[in-house]
Image 1 (cartoon, one colour):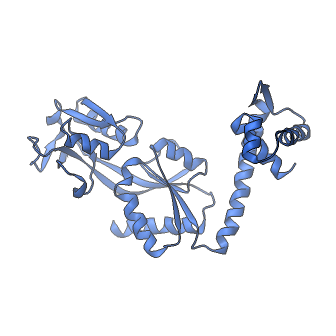
Image 2 (cartoon, rainbow, N blue to C red):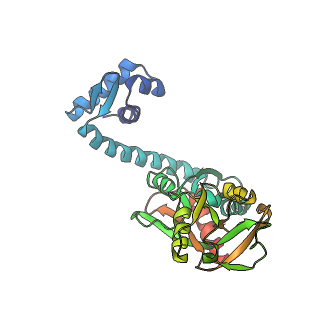
Image 3 (cartoon, rainbow, N blue to C red):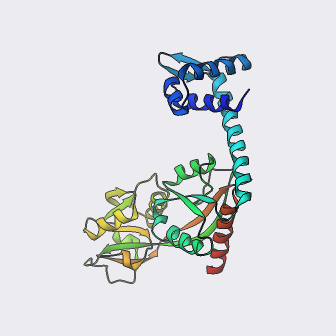
Length: 294
């Protein structure tokens, strides 16, 4: 069994099409078909069901693919580990983060980190919590910033900071000049909220439940910037994580006295998985930074 056979098998399994896989691998279709046939002969079972021009993994193929993925990931990690040892200050860090962290947390941290490690590169991925956690488990990213993952046993998570969630209203709103407000006072107001599949949306929904009412929803968004813009356009009011005053054009921010409005943000990684020296530098920097600011 050869290394290239495993790579070929994985590509065919992903694309479910021999011709397309051959094009991606830059080999001829007959050569690819012979390689798969030899692999099946060595294993003693067929791995695919042929369905016209496409191929689909059978039960043996699905079992074997799980092992092949792990083997390829281990070998790739070994190759990367050796390369990293040659130059630990010129590696890369792959980082995922939820949408609302792209405003303050990630830009600020990366700016500070690059003052000490200017040659380390970053690959950034912004998505909803469940998807970046899927990327983390799949080995596509080294770390992610998110709320605490409750159902991911193999993921290590540490708390970094507590964010206040504030009320934002248009500048000419009756509550615009108040220092604080009880959220229940606003039960008749239209709200711009976040979609429930976002962790922020779930947190804010629980806040409304604690306040004792179901909000009248004018719009559900995904990005903090979109929500801020719609509030400035007087389409409703909203609860958002506190952001810089310079980004609050046309709106006022008001502290919510009741219920408690906050969320906890942390950093997550897969326990026991190899990460590069560059990634370890970033992890240590983040932990030390929040110890100092805490």
